[in-house]
Image (tube, rainbow, N blue to C red; front, side, top):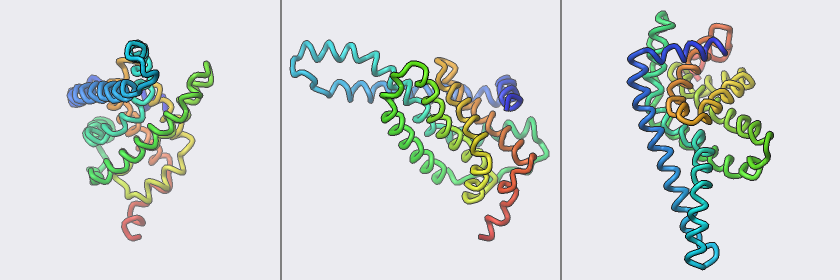
Length: 233
């Protein structure tokens, strides 16, 4: 897993990846700003006391809360933008490191986006429910990584694996590596929690997961070696 992360970091020097990083940064900034605006408008709409000046003061104080909430919800929300460049990132990684692989058929964009939207919605709800636990110093970090590690590990794995495998095969393969996938997801969650670095994290995470998927297949990930069985089912 460390080797996969190092290789992903090294490929940031690849011009093809750099072009995707620029797109990723712009999309990530837009996503974060959108979150801040939506959360801010939601908090501003709350008429807490009915006293204009006091509600205004509370709204100003709540700006910090707005940014914090946006930061906490960013990993779950960013799932939606992964599909916009995941194919190109994975192709660039395979071209450079695994040139012997046949071209990936790819996954239907509409299906991938629908699945991502569903998982993003679940992630947002779960993170909102976990907010009281995030107030506990120490355990809050573990809770954040555990929750978002599962969501992000699943999303990035499915996004990369669906390029070559059918849905049922991907689900079976995911179950075989669920613990390793959870750990990989926690690594991605840490990337997305680091200010500024989280702007390029979606590209880096996709490259990271591409290396892991290829490695797991070569190590004998049984389910991922059966695309023909999926196609006959």
